Length: 102
Image (cartoon, rainbow, N blue to C red; front, top):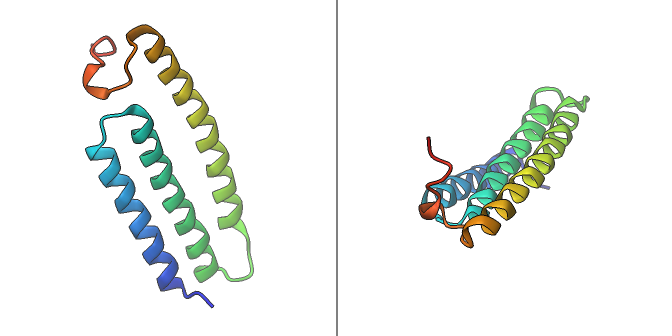
């Protein structure tokens, strides 16, 4: 049986791995994966705190499913943007993206 502390520890590790990946990676795809990792850590927190605070309800689970659906739509849009960037620049490195700056 997993305890709430273990689930929160897994969520914290996922969040910090996502933050580390977001800060250190130069590829847009790796940055997107890091953002998805952080969103999944937040979804785990929603379900864990729902289970802890309101044991008989499922609002946290429904909110997490809604957040996963929003993250999937966001990923589809981000991948479309990355494909467009690659077609124009033949590179997806964040260092090379100067056309999108103001």
